[in-house]
Image 1 (tube, rainbow, N blue to C red):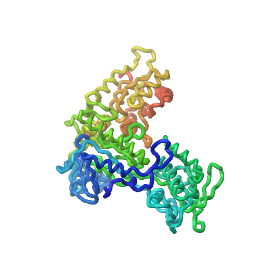
Image 2 (cartoon, rainbow, N blue to C red):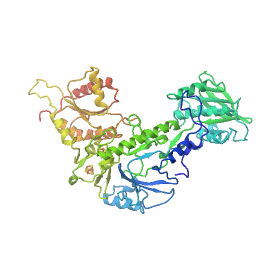
Image 3 (tube, rainbow, N blue to C red):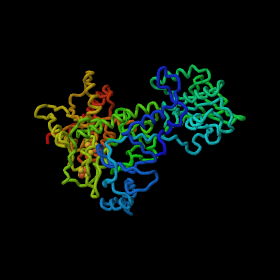
Image 4 (cartoon, helix red, strand yellow):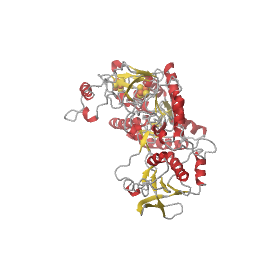
Length: 601
Ligand code: SF4
Ligand code: SF4
């Protein structure tokens, strides 16, 4: 986008140590990296360029590039805002009318299904669009003097000054020999660091404290922190800083920064020493965070029906990683991998490693597409959801609910599958009210047959038939947790039978209705956690199942069945010790309701 590559990495004085003994700062490596890059004749660098749209699917993305600010036919169209989908009486417009309004809204932009004949072909995309410094809103940090005292700056501003020469006070150009670094904004009970901070902001404070010592033999740096995060071998750097007699580190909450003659006074509370501390300072540096570029702009501008950006990234503060725990580098869009500050706040050194990870993922993706198989997490899966389109009602649920935006739809609302975008989660199968989506080896009938094969004890065999409870269990985390419960010899009610499913998102309510109508007394779904600390391998599966479960509750009530007969549990893979109680409590609750009245019919 800019005229030169390098970004913030090209604007620093020094970098964190990357070699044993991890104590000395090193000169920036960015120019050497750029020089190395220029030696590769098969790598093309485009500057002053942004993405107008990325269309298609992994293995065959068609990318339209343009100059920043240009308006072109292949600028990506945006989905209709919700309010534009309604008529003047607040009712939903029908599909055709909505399409008409959509075309008008995006006039001058080619539809997502139109491929740019001059577009360039790519197999996979790595998004490394980086970050920008956090911009404080209004008087957000007024108590720290930001905005009113010219010698209070952010860490980025301080770095820029340090890169330009000796550190001087911005107010009068005099030497800044006493500098206070503030790690957390100090808001009473909330001891959080600045937004978008992380270990990088701790490490940058340590690095910048060292600049003060480099510039002035009698310089003093004070670091007030609530959390000092120095992962891995960065701990050695932290220890070396602790040995410097000119750098003072203490846990504490900075409560105020005020003018004091020609300098400032910084007051901190709740320090390790248990007393208030006042420090005279020439400058104060706030360790504000790194805001990913995707907060301001979709950047990738995907020609996908679900929209040009990554969906729901607001839940993750705008970072576009799809599962922090299990799948680093992956985004919610197959074939598009994230590296560096776009994924989480991180140091340059971490970003370099990250780029390698993302590149390997991109290579895996291209190879998988070439072989016609799925990428992670169902690597190697050769099946793909089949649609029996003759019975499709164009309800768009599959297109809307697919966690990976794999389905587009045409002007009539008929889903258009993009097989290489699909991760085979089965969410579309769970969503389809017509039950016309299925895989060759996993479909409504195959699981339905398993449900039918579960025996329901009857009075023919027992004086008092035991209850029968069905558990539909996600194969990713919940099923291994059950396995571990078994390995640990943990026991629970013998009345329960389990059927593994790909993801709770793939559970079609017909299986639950079938189970209850054949006399089972209760059904539970066991899957991964949802919400902002979600662990669902397919991002939204448990969340969607939760919504569907609420709806099935209403349907059960209309059948005179208690809605408590169906429930959903969420567990982490290491929650095996919680499972017996979870399951037994549910069995007990169902027993309290009595046998299913449909039993025996
Ligand atoms: S299986 Fe999952 S990823 Fe594939 S189309 Fe269906 S919902 Fe989308
Ligand atoms: S959910 Fe089923 S009926 Fe609805 S659009 Fe998709 S395939 Fe058609």
